[in-house]
Image (cartoon, rainbow, N blue to C red; front, side, top):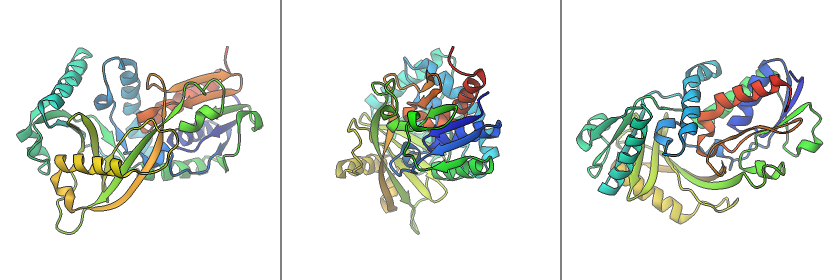
Amino acid sequence: MVSRVAVLGGGVIGLSVAWRVASSGCAVTVFDDECRTAGSWVAGGMLAPVTESWPGEEELLELGSRSLALWPEFARELGDVGLRTDGTLAVALDSADVGVLDVLAEHLRGLGRETDRLTGRELRALEPGLGPRVRGGLSVPGDLALDNRALLSALRKACAAAGVAFEPRRATPSTVDADVVVIAAGAWSGDLHPALKPVIRPVKGEILRLAPRRGSLPPPTRTVRAHVEGRPVYLVPKEDGLVVGATQYEAGFDPAVTVGGVRDLLRDAEVVLPGIAEYELVESAAGFRAGSPDNAPVIGWLEPGVLAATGHHRNGLLLAPITAEMVLELLRGGGPR
């Protein structure tokens, strides 16, 4: 086991790695600027390997399922992170959207993972706020959700309690004095090592935060993922309202929230949950996911003394516990063979 570790990046992945590594007895320093366009800050908070899965991503589904099983204990150790256990409803509004869910259900059935098919009426019995155009969907009771910003705060406190030091992120692997550097800078990781340059790219996404006003219907109790004329939209309940997301663009590091993005999210979300028309629009934000060619994370040695833990795309929050375990195991192995 190495004795000094530097983690470049203080999002959910970097902080989870730092916490677990410091708790094992290493001296750990996190280099981070608490960027408000990082994926962890702008995330919806879903822990949903099943409803995120798709044919061809079976290994990612398995990895996500293993990490999901770690989350209850991971959250218990951290304290209040707003963990919700009500599950997910994946809903469709027209025949083409129903066809997308049919593909997902058949894919999951082939992997031995059954989901409950529900009619529009059955869905509205579970979530009365769903609109009349919702025709059918799937119930996935095992999915979880949490408050991503509460999670970031809890992880920083856990890191501090474990002795992790924090420095501004003006560092590259070649300038850090440590036995091992872990690159966990999300969408910015590609600039920190030549091996990551052609692999990691920013994928822009926009989210909205809404809050119910007096007299408006309450948010749903479950996460709702919908396809509206082929466009995906999700609605994740929080203690203080609802997160609606997320657009997805290949736009580099453009931080602007676009009028079109806000319009599309509100239009589609209102079709799914008409009552949100009475909500307050509290925040609009853009952030950057760390995309990879196959949507799978890059976790492993890049060279002696340099590890990667990046490329988690839509699954950074979900994969945080298992990524931290994998990095810790690599460090215990001492380095690349």
